[in-house]
Amino acid sequence: MSSPNSSEREKYLYNLDLKNASNNPYLDYEALKKVMFKIFQGKKTISYERQKELTKLSYSPIDMETYAKLHNFSDTLMVTEYFAYTRTKIQNITNRTDRILVVGCGQGRLAEVYLTLAAIYNVKEVVFLDLIKEHVEQTEEKIRLAKEANPRLRNVKTELIVGDINETEINSVFDSIWLIWFVSSEFCNAESPEALISTRNRIYQKFNKLLTPQGALIEDIPDPNMEPGFYHLGNLISEDILRRNGILPGQQKNLLLSNWSPEQPEKDNVSFPYQLRFTARNGWDVQEKERAGFAMKKNDQLKIPISSTYAIDTALSMIRESSPTNMGQILRDLKSLANNTIQYPEIDVVDQKRRKITWWEKTN
Image 1: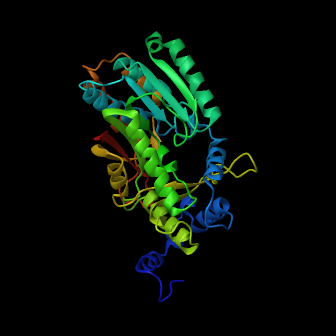
Image 2: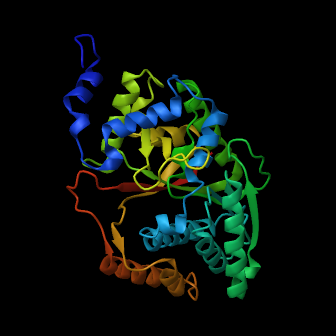
């Protein structure tokens, strides 16, 4: 209950009746409160190392090829479009390295896409990094199969790294760094509100150092600012739960409790279908990147599909034989195919999912 001494924000959240805001099981108030208890175990904080362990466990049973099948075609289109934009700009940079870094490569779902685009745009090396050893091994196998099937990809050197980007030493410099499918929302240190911000600042400052002058940082994040929307409502419910339990004061509005248990039941030491994510609201992400020496170059808000006819292979078959000179037409063809074969939720659906992809340019 809201009391006379509650803050205006607490009163606002209370008046929204968040406990009855949606019948979507992933946004169920009591289920998300359970997520909070599962992660924090009755405490106000959780160590960074424990949080990484839980993150690994949350992904361990998931087959991303199946889980993300609705997004594969649109993700390939999105990566191709931003790859073409950034490489066109970077071609004119004197100190370009012709290397790119993919952070959070997962099970290698988009590995062949990156390699194919690298071959087209004369990128010499692609480095793939992930927190989970098994994911890196699966990515390595996908790369092996892709190079076996397409000799053109064999000219692109690849390196695979297991580690936390916050702690892993990387000595190379890159033209672009890629964080696709909400990777940066997992840069979330819940040891304290101060640790949360300092960890994120440190990671983005590291990205700045890893990039050549005018290098590109490409990331997509859940969009909690789009109202109505799944992440907007999930963000509000999470804020309310965390506020009521005194967890990470001052940062609750930027946090999202995630519950995957409807499709991934919890199993001791096997599956942990819960996460705490950072989802910046109301321009916080812009301030964060500007502090680290980045400026927004391009930004798109995208709907997340609810059905899709085609997958990565269809998109790759159109991209493989392209060149920088005809990539514009290839992108128009891909967009036309997407418009005719991908179904998106209506704009007024309360639990529609939206994401935001941004190209941040290193400015200093």
